[in-house]
Length: 66
Image (tube, rainbow, N blue to C red; front, side, top):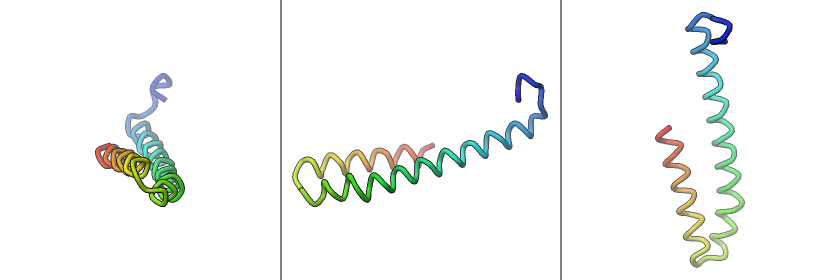
């Protein structure tokens, strides 16, 4: 759109839509990770569980900051 010299507001609208779509994908992946990987690791307990929880916390922090 930039190369085609489209109207700036139209480009910003598309950027916003793409951002929302990526956030939706990220939240879906995070939900799957929590319900499978983290839940299974928590059931096992120990250091594996602690590591999965740390990973999930880090991922959530990255999403919140973005």
